[in-house]
Image (cartoon, rainbow, N blue to C red; front, side, top):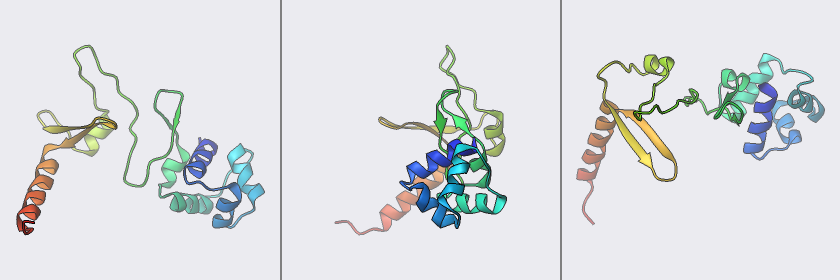
Length: 146
C-alpha cells in the first residue's frame, strides 16, 4: 500500500527519488527503502510526504483500486475515492453507505446528474447545484453587457 502510493505520487508529480528525499530531509537511499518496502517512514516523515503531495496521511497509507487490480493514486485533501459500484440490470447503482451518511443522502433526496462526454458522470445534491446556479445567475446579471 504505502510503497505503491509513494511510487505513484512521486511519478505523478514528476519527482526523482533524490528530489523527494531532499524535500523530506533524508537520503535518497532511505527513501528508496520506503518505495521498496524494506522500511517504513516515521509519522513525522509521513506528514511531510502528505503535505508535499497535498493528501492526508490516511490516504497515503491506504490503497484503492478501480477494478480490484489497478491501483488508483491517493486523492487530494477533501477529495475521496469511495470504491467502485456496479450498474444492475435496471440501470441502478447503490451508493456506498459511508457516502450516503457523509452527504446526508436519504430516501427522497434529489441529486442532479452531470456528465462530461470525455470525463464521465457526477452526482451533486440538488440544493448545492441550485445554490450555485442562483449565484451564477446573480453574478451574470451584475455584469455589464458587452
